[in-house]
Image (cartoon, rainbow, N blue to C red; front, top):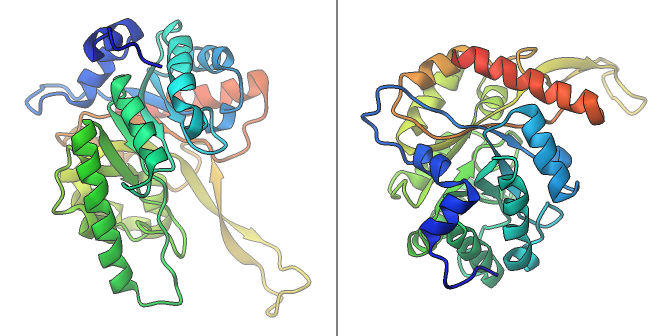
Length: 308
């Protein structure tokens, strides 16, 4: 538990998070954009806290996005006890935690409230919501209206707890946010300080192809976090159950720079007022040990090259 005798600012300073929190909320008149470079630790989420800290330092991230959700590094039911411990372990290697990935999708859920309250008290400025899904057997427009109300309630909770929620676009036939335009519909009337966009250029490129500039510009006023991963289209031989007998195309995640994501996105990003974190995600096979760390470092090097 967080001691009531320690102020939020004191904990931020002691945990080494205050500098990154400042970058997230940097003034828009800053002459040079500064993007804290994070790693989403999903591939190593079940390692010990010390191992996560050591791997993060070895890769060279400024901070991490930490899974605080069912099956993640921190189980939501134990958030008050465990989240301070993992932050302390990361602090020893000067690794910050500006963002957590959560199961939050309902403002009335007591467990979600506990997770967000604890994160806010620990000085974590942002969290990522759980994905939302359409029911393809029902009309889409009424569902969008229901999601808008849910987002409004979550934004109100965020405002009360003084934490910024984010919602990620994700590719897939039934994901809310796959077309990106629906994300804008959901948050266009919300205060971005309470609920904003977690823009994934990998998923946006997969779904939109060459239209990512439209999607990025649409969400630009709402940007809070940017995530990056890469993919390519690959042909898969038809199986015994295939009716056509012809190969089909499938998306395949790959190392950054080997696929469809364009470096031009980051040239565009540098011209915007966005100052928030950029988080690298890893969905392709990384291997273990040194091989895994080398792959993560390679993707980080590509990202830094694109931002140079």
